Length: 106
Image (cartoon, rainbow, N blue to C red; front, side, top):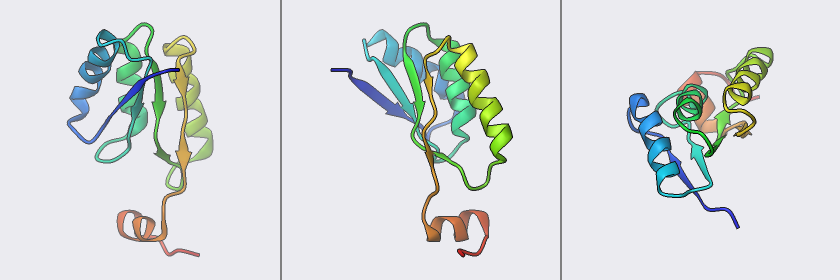
């Protein structure tokens, strides 16, 4: 069984330290939430700061992103992390899309 930790919602500058701490504590993976900051940037910082910790997004909001750019970001994080990255995507819910992104729900 793998044991993990999650982080996100704090300052983006804390992502690397949070990942380092999770690795030091012996966690197998860390999930990066997209709450207050871009999960892809946080995952990049976390991957760069660690050597064995698996990094995953939980969840990256797919709706506002260009698919090709998102794929390139995931590819780059996967390369940077030497295969330790997993991309978690989600569509979010009606209210969130309407309030956060000001788009109609169709």
